[in-house]
Length: 164
Image (cartoon, rainbow, N blue to C red; front, side, top):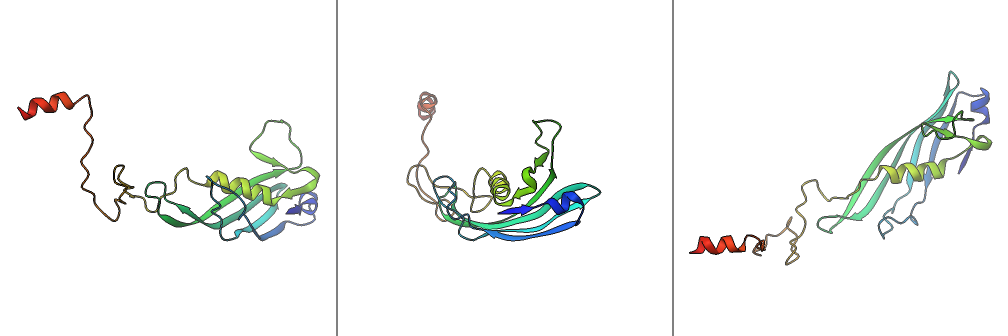
């Protein structure tokens, strides 16, 4: 979805509202397709004293598996999207601003990038998730297991001394 920005950069208008939804259901993340609801973008693009910015909120839900216990979990996200927009750059290597070529902003691509960059590296069902037992596979959040801990082979000789 492209938004024409000639009127903002030219000074014809001061604000453009942004209110749209995108379907990310075909976007893959770690081998699954977690976007089961539309990704919503709401905010505005504005020109304040010649500085054009986009300020919006990206909201969506993900259905993923906990990285510790593998239980399904639904997580809600609200990500701020704030970027400075320019029609030309003095330096080619400048990540502080988004260059708007042809006076059109690709809102879909910008939303996709901001969404994936804001996702956590691990998804957890709860902050203190205990995970699963590496021996029997029991979910330690729900059950306790009676598995004995493995003895470090370097310490095994010392344990023999304690038994004597």
